[in-house]
Image (cartoon, rainbow, N blue to C red; front, side, top):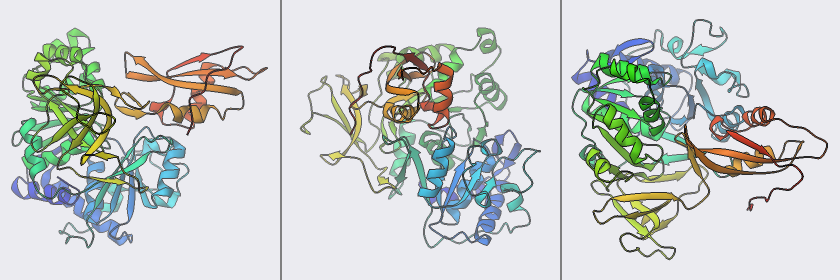
Length: 489
């Protein structure tokens, strides 16, 4: 389900099942018919405000109907959706909005402080509370009184830009090209067995490619989506039980929070309806997968891939039981090879760099750069090997990026921020193991002679300059010596 097909997908479901619930969220319930009507209303409102095909609109929102309405309406108008991470810093949002020439920024009320540097005339509230500022328009207000009539296809199809962490600190905008046919759907559903009219709890954020692909591809099965603005493990169990949900979409950190719940809370919830726990976003340890399935249902389908690559491999319950820690097998029409530094395929069992080719073409970054290729296959940047059964195992990155709680984080971004502190003479940042987030950043700081710094001051300084997931979780002060700086390009 590519960019052009999101609007048509929503309207197709609305025609087939108009009275079926489309979304259950913190605002209540809405049917597919009403959701499609409100998308048409917002599309008209955007056109009335002068939005033209190709114009960019940033969206900074949590999971709820107004985010969905905004994304689909922007694309229905032919616009470019700039999906921003809810952990973006104030400086990142301001710079991205300017760099990508955003005509509007749709932002949840809770993120108004983050949007402080954005021209206020460009701001529109997505989720608005009762005490919302009276000088700002909201998505709800824009829709009022607008026509619910269908819109013709725009002169230029809509596009989604998903922002991924970059080595320079400012997130890179990744473009996804439109698939030429329905083969990606066949590959996806051939590996993860969605069924028609299922109830799908999407706990993973929609601004990530994993949450979005499950929403977009899921449209072809006419589902009911359960969306919550904030993840809470006990609430997820309640939603599965109350709505007899068959599918749960998560990142591994969410699975960890679920298995760490009080056993009495777990025992109080009947989640036997759960047939698919679709996981992606960071490494899924075999111990976690099997512990989760022991506590809940044998339902884990782990997706290994990235925004740029699309999918690489998918591991189902049987493979995760038989080979804990595996990333799984390539799905339909997906080619995966492990290559050495010279671009030659390594023997089975030997480690090399993982390369992939599939029907989800990467359109490059908005700055004009792209990923590297070898033998026609995209370099994932990950190291791994195949076992004798054709299952892939990922052993780590071939660069210094870490994944913390599902977010790509580069040590250099934090180093470059902290070295500018007037009381810091040197700093080295590296990834360390972390029980809660898988990996986290640790900062080793040399304080200037005569100055004093606390860990709280370092964290506060970082929070003003980097995304929250790039703030150090550990800080060590190195007195009377100089840190060995990381090589800088």
